[in-house]
Image (cartoon, rainbow, N blue to C red):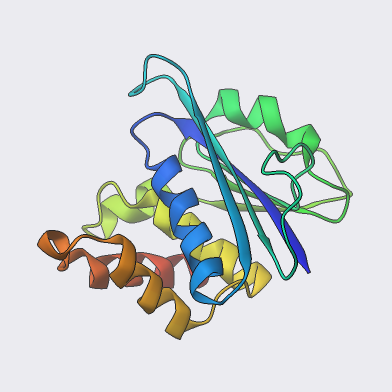
Length: 176
């Protein structure tokens, strides 16, 4: 089994952190993983994306050109990556920020108003994590046990109070 994912949006939306979180889910589940970030020199406000591979076997290349899963949080990233998703793949789209509807019939698209949901639930800045929750629901990529273990590993002790908020955001995404 190999799942290749691209996460993309503006810098400052937590795209790279969400990708790192996915990689840790695989790592905590004893899978082979790769995480390859890419961002423009502008950082906040510029474009950011990352490729994450999670596999039962060694990952041959960290570069993802035809993702099984695409998570997008802005229009330019949607335009850039939507046609790269493998037939039979999944696109998870922040419909608060992206008005376009996908015309492809060979992929499953999920429109999640994650930015709006995050603000309404007092989880400002966690729209990315809500989308990760939707990915988990649709792919079964990580168990609740693995999620908690990974969050405790990647969230520094000084910010340990954010573990429960991240779990809440993931649950919101699973139920979206």
